[in-house]
Image (cartoon, rainbow, N blue to C red; front, top):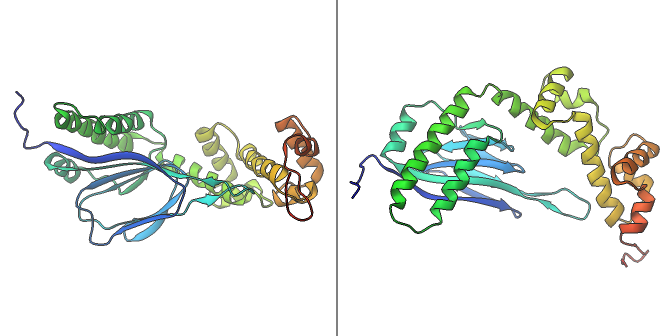
Length: 280
């Protein structure tokens, strides 16, 4: 029989959640456990060093006991039809002497962007899965998994030279998501991160495998597709409202992506709008 380990730490809860409705929590007096939170999709606002900061995909938050914690999630509509982009996250709460010792001997920041590290996310999913099971020696298994998880985080944060670059790339992506419907230049996008066009282009391509311009066009096409299908706007109005430089450019890009002109696509797949606002 395995003897109890006085240094053992435990997982209080662990899960994944996708918020589609506003959600907020606040612990002004501080938490009573260690909280790990990873932003997987969408954005939110979280309390970091006394101020609320925007949290983007790839951001990891670690709060020790006693530290104030606040979270504000406001999922936003991203299409003309009102479709909501969920704000999803992985979270884990734990406590115990080993965690106390580990935290005291590390100098990890409350917030850092680790990107989508496969090892971290695989461990996180495994912990979530094991936490849901009922089995013998569960506490011992969770203790070892939690130690492995923490040491992996320490390694990823400490040796990942791309952390700053990934953080910049996601900030650029978020700026494009929020402004793609406006006339945008590479200079404007790069200025949002305070870096040169060449540097931003390199970081974005390294993180997402496509250029900033190509991603901007894809966001515009997604917005345009929804408006072609579900709005009563004219095609010229849609071209203007989704940021395309001209109607001809809009038609050319739309056909190249969807294999139909905007008019053909609307006639084949879209709702038909009447003057009274009803649809077929």
